[in-house]
Length: 409
Image (cartoon, rainbow, N blue to C red; front, side, top):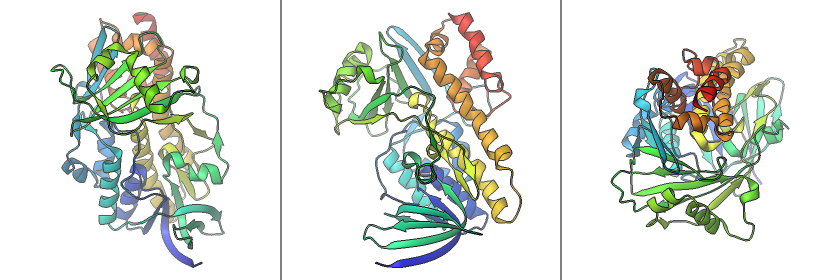
């Protein structure tokens, strides 16, 4: 068994979106970067409907042009449906300045586009490497890995960034995982050849459908540019039938939402449905001595507002500048410069997620006498601008939503 050693300025665990962005930004600053990735790309992942705020971070990392050239499905908003009620938000009409459009992507292709473009910028990515241990030595971080042939490697860096997503490598190895504040929920999902012929169906928007009887059950339909779509449902555990396989459960639950069932009545399942249970996650801290957690490796809220990739890219963008400073010998206040600003947006999304599941946000979204200024502010959050404190619904989210809740009840 080989035992090989290499040294870098920064080691990144995971080659997904946050890993690609942080690595590209660090490379721009002249640092040597190694990315270790357990899987081989392309590989399936969920989180397929991007938010416009993400485009800012891709652009800063010189990763936007490859995404534009990849031919992904254009996206300009979101549609919400509850029985006969229907409302839509056009992200180009938001309150915050910045991008108003983005893409709906198959993550297998999207993540590979980002990773390939990151390699082209000079970042080294090692695929098929599993992290087995992390050791914080006097002046360096040692990352121990095993490849698929059983060879062991020891990589050394001045700093370590965990972008492992749901793999949550450092939270497991360093015992940082804590229970999420959200109830346990399950999701069933797959890709379909949607065969949608309805002329009123807008492929440029994600469709969110609410169950006709349960406000805590909702469905997504994310169209792709090749005539396929991602479809899924989120349910509490008590509605899961343990005697059904994942595909039959997804089909049965879709059938309970008549509008969605009718829209997809000619759909063909491309793959058997998959399931994720208890996906919400949290950690005791986002950073420590010579390490930082990015994106889903730190915290995952809920898929309802497609915030996962946006939070991941925001965390990567925030962390890259601070990592550079620390590697260059500057003192960095990670709590004030990373934890607090990142959590501002996460807490905004959390506030919206909580209001969604208690039904109050659903009533706000479907209210038929929306004040245009307020609608644009809410639209900004839905577009991912959860860090824009010029928006009152970011600066004081809880109180503002409570006022709207009373007005729209």
